[in-house]
View (cartoon, rainbow, N blue to C red):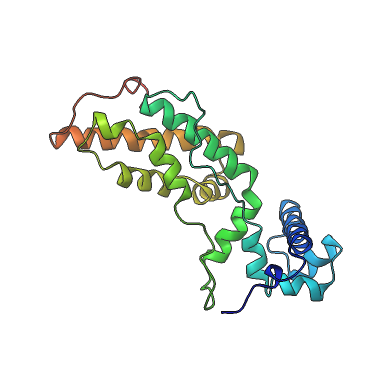
Length: 216
């Protein structure tokens, strides 16, 4: 297996060069460039094209590298409540903020996800991190509603939110970006309410979590 160029010799300097290229790509995306080329990014970063291609052999690899990296395991504050509805609201508010902040980069990754990757390339959209954030918000349900499939619910909520939802809401439905956080939270709560109702109908816990009544 070949060793990545930036892993050999002068690793710190190469890391700085890689970061400069990714930052330049992000700035171009924020400025409206749909999918900047390696040449455009190299020029913006003040780095030679030859050097840029050593780090990113093609446009796809560069745009994917500009995708936001959020290493958090949870979007909840340290003093998060135990009420799953309140926890879900907090998580969705922060998730929506991240999506709006990184909208150009996420849109570029979404476009790339519609094209088949070449051999050895990973998926354009990152897998599972947002699902983990949502599942973390719903953790109390594992004790109060043991018959409810929390993982399945988290996947359902993620499927109806995120960059895909933002694109449809803004581009198709004409929803102002200022309303996106509220719309995503409403959708998440609606799915939670439906899941709780189904669990009750199937003989699970009929009692709603605190704070859920009158807010769904």
